[in-house]
Length: 80
Image (tube, rainbow, N blue to C red):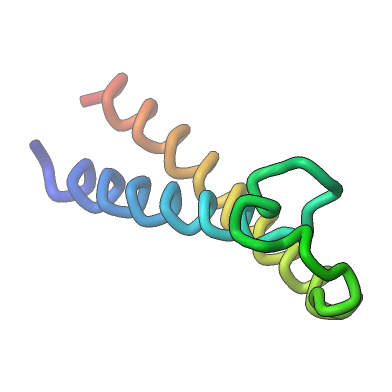
């Protein structure tokens, strides 16, 4: 395995973990995984609108990084 492949695989694992965490941190709309962690107890104690928008931006950014890493791994595997 080349160094580029190892770096991309590590980046894929890290971005996958952060993508899962950011998705689970989102405010629930009822009956989801966030209710399992106490998200459905009090809707007024949830995050503000600004924090939710920032979390959305972070989630989209991590998702784009995740997709780019998968595409890069596919290209490296194809041309190696």
